Length: 461
Figure 1 (cartoon, helix red, strand yellow):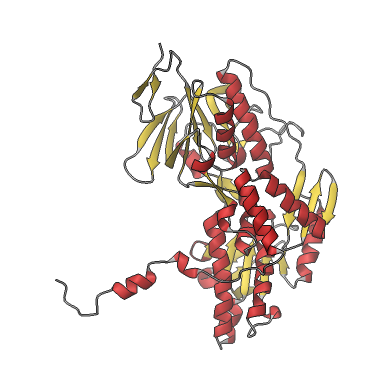
Figure 2: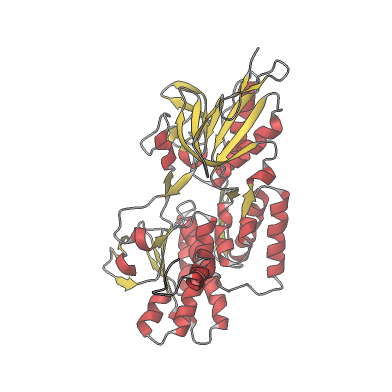
């Protein structure tokens, strides 16, 4: 007669002679949230308990980061609260610091208190990815990524703050530096962030009579000879042409070599000061995977079968599953040796397939291969501007922008979030965009600390 284990390893007692399986979901990004949500709907509490571990209380819908940063939607509407959506799951606010699959146990460090072990029967390893950086002098001190809602909010406030700095100063060098915005990386994240932020800043200039649009300098640095590698070259070329028409400085076949003290030095020999350096040059699997005993490929991704089961050579690692950015999942729609791209499109579908396969295994059935032909890509280039290539059909301008919004609105989890995003967009047709910086968000105690500091030389009691 089976006895199930509590979340700290202690017995919880039997449930009518049934021992429900514990499914541990590591990470609540696209894969983790969708997989946990589907598992909690497909499996009864007598079949399985789903435990989700993530340090953040929300899932960030990353395709909406550029719009949240530009003020087109509220930042809160670009995230999905875990406890609201995963009501049938156990949510643990913490970080998985180690997975010992031989013992079927994970070590979790809660956001407060001592670490604890959580035993499991199945584990979904989906910590996602982090920014892939290079040892470029000055990047650590001066760069900012664009993967989290915090980074998106910071970038918005920072850009608007730079406009205030430029408008207030009488020093041409300070003004030029403040109005120079450098983005490194010409993939979707970089192009959308650059285009949306430039669009927002240009809108904001109507309230800055001291500044002229031509004083702003927006620089894109891309190491290859094209942007948007996910679409055909002609669509990438169209994107570059549109950005050039907006007087942006596009540097292809160019690398960032240094940004010490905010002085950007490029491989083409150019050098200029810039207060804003945004790094969007790719991602790599989460370093959390280094603290596991799962097999990895040369790019440090967990090796998987098309069924999303972790595989070590030809041997399936029983009870271990992975998908998304941190997993090497064979792409069955292409020649052998190809793997699914690290995109939200694959992650969401892999999560659903993986959840169904875990349910199949628990019920004694065979798992099914994941197979999905990449439908295409859509990108926003600012308000009412976009580029799209879907199932071979190419669109630009307003139709592409509308498709971009429609697609991502349909993919963000929960009816609640869909309604809020649509309301934000609808209000934007009638109300002007908010262009105020809330810089105090980043150091809210500064003013109070200054006011409450004891006078210099005052005696302490």
